[in-house]
Length: 101
Image 1 (cartoon, rainbow, N blue to C red):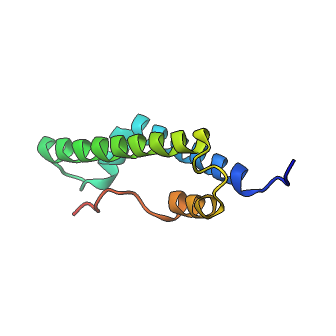
Image 2: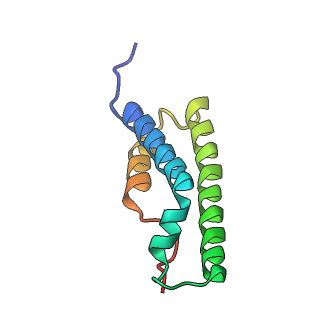
């Protein structure tokens, strides 16, 4: 048996934490949309932001599924470079939504 690396568990925990955050954003979509809009907004503005958020979160979940499938299949599980990059990519970048004006 080889020595156990801390990269694989940290990558797994980072992936699961990212999944929890995305699911929480789906559940609290209404309050997140209202927070990014001005105090007075039209239903059209709300609908536009809602569509953008749903699309961004759906793309995030789709790419997350691809990454998780690659991780569990072993293709990228023990690749140390990938395991080092993954936690930074999931935690270091802000939301894909543009700022509200």
